[in-house]
Length: 243
Image (tube, rainbow, N blue to C red; front, side):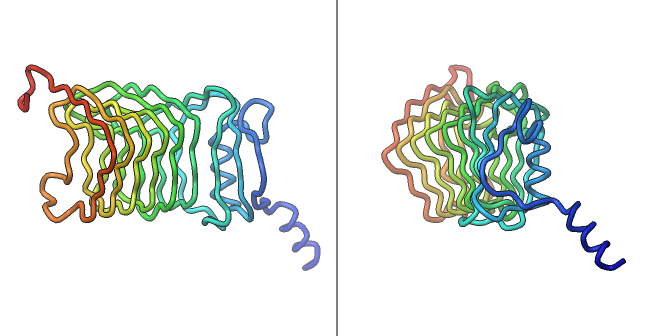
């Protein structure tokens, strides 16, 4: 009886992920919800690449992944132009590590955050993405880094909402590099996280404020901020209070 029970448990235990999987009709997983559930439930034992072959509707939250880390990176990649949409925040990273999203686009319809990075999230990357939202003088940041460390946005275009990016005081060692940042409705971005690097970007927009090296009410934040080799072209609205 004991042997049969052990064999039954082994038969139904979900396999840990390794290698390449497709997401979409006829793929390994029907949608990103199914893939993320498997990822956070079963975990990883080797590098994992999810190839997304159809548009996806969220929202999604990726928490801690068993086996996560630099030896077992997880990549969500695209085949063709793949659009993400859904209730905002569409994507929340909260406790995962070494996860990359690359090649996705999204035109978000509200000024709530589209992407939130929170908690102990570490070493996650957004690469070659194109995310935008309506610009407004109220709302939240398109990218809201309320926590996390070692977060990167690379080779991407993004902007809109209340501000394109907010690096909160709990965010550390993040980098935005080689991007086109198209502003926000009130700020282009606010950077309060320690050891933040803003390098080799083209930054433009029509906003009341430009780039804030710090966040109001946090006078000791933004330690070791590095702003290197960027181009800025900022147009203030003629009726804005900071014109």
